[in-house]
Length: 61
Image (cartoon, rainbow, N blue to C red; front, side, top):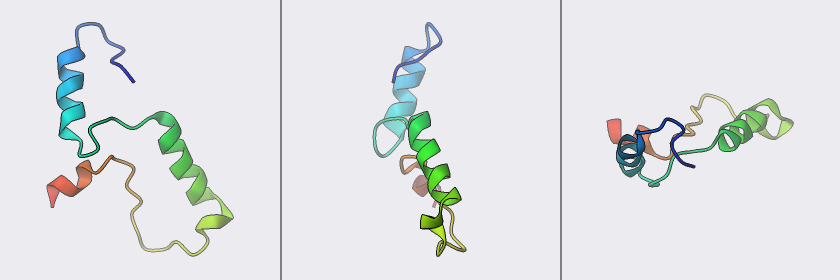
């Protein structure tokens, strides 16, 4: 994935390096999480937060 706004490559790279996985997630990865939650496969999933953030949420704790 690359920046879509011209001239923003440095900002994109800084953000990418901030994420523990060193990459930004894709729309497909977010969609797969949503499909999982909407499916019968998640029938036993309760009382949890499913973070699709590349691990950046862990940096706040």
